[in-house]
Length: 330
Image 1 (cartoon, one colour):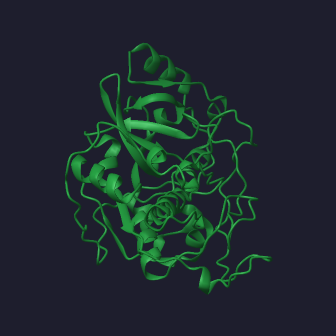
Image 2 (cartoon, helix red, strand yellow):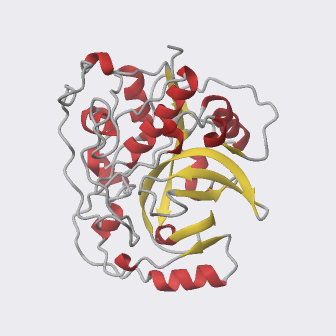
Image 3 (cartoon, helix red, strand yellow):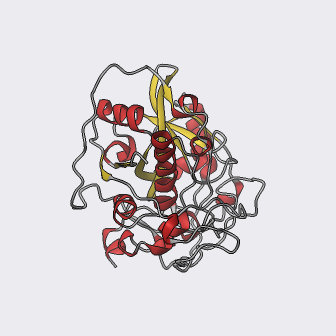
């Protein structure tokens, strides 16, 4: 498989050997060295297998992946505020404040994509909507390997080429195809059962759930463009400010899994895989510039599901791996 050859995502490594992560040492050092962020104890890591940890890292980091039609439609690089949070500007859009949960599936590439797409549709059309993560995850053959990882740019191309139906979170009974994978506790002692082994990718079902009155084909939503966002900070900020949140992929190391608050910068630990999130704003904390990101590990993780990561230095490759698209007017 190309994914294994690239060695960029380990969601489906054939190993169950327990790894000695020793996060207690990482936490102690991060918190004692005056870092820009705080780490915390996550006891389930002490005997976590590589497979368990890496199952959450389902993104292929391939910023150079050649996909036709991905030229960035430039936006005017005008004056921008020192801080920005899409939740404040578009509070009427429920999706902008939603933290989803990928469950025991390496679907971050799909979840982050539909989060940003939902936001962009609402911003453009003033329509509260939740695009289905499972429709993208299960039906996009060119996107990758479903719960075993995928390419963010292909997710956006699928939205443009084929369209994606609506669907809410697990047990929401919202939209055409709600997410079928249960919520679980990701690297924290949370309100849900601990995440288990990676699940099989759900089947591609081309009909809506029972009781939903719109036909599957009529429920499809398509984009009018998809593209890579240039990695310079001003272009990224302008893109978010004028068009809405973007999807970003970055390299995850062991220390990130202990994140509790503050502006994350890599400190120490092994590379665990590629991960995708939604970037919805920026700001500065104690003189440190950051991107504001929504994770897909439910609201028990990090700062109620969100985290901040260093802005302006391509931290963990995050600024070179941003993708987005344009929602139509209607």
